[in-house]
Length: 253
Ligand SMILES: [Zn+2]
Ligand SMILES: [Zn+2]
Image (cartoon, rainbow, N blue to C red; front, side, top):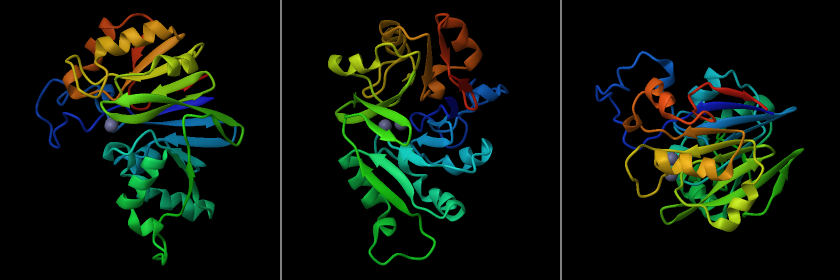
């Protein structure tokens, strides 16, 4: 399995124009974060988790010219708003895109992209094949997907475990019973927004404690706000088996 971090940033706390802080003016490419998403490749299968506003740029940047499915964690804009650009894959692959999400997320996609779901469709619009999921495991081809319930303040969202890899973005609480689904995972990604407390995201220390509790071989942080500070300084503070992910980081599992 190959994982590519397409984006490791957030819309939270990021000004549209650089605020002039150390991160905004950093020359380190690891401080340039697009909105959070990962590409998962297993054999011939290619799946992305979330399609945020940077989706098109992310697909171009990593040279991804084939995509089989999109998994949605939740319906916040920084995770869904790039869905329109799956039309390029429809055009090349001559088939609808398989899209997986919970029922509430499906309703949100419906109201956010009404033209995609209209009875009389305008030519060239994105084509999707919708699959409503729950917290039960399911298959995409050869890939087993285990959804993990997380709470994002009051919003129930999903993380996903795919074999030895798990991705938990946008949340700050995982029910104990759901943690069992993560036992034995070797590579665990957890959202860590910033150092200060936040209503709906893990802080740096909360993310580190969750990773230490679940004890994967390696833990990675994502959905990082510029309030976290620069990459080089953050890396120095982290325990040896935890790294800050950055855009373009590739894991070969
Ligand atoms: Zn969110
Ligand atoms: Zn988010």
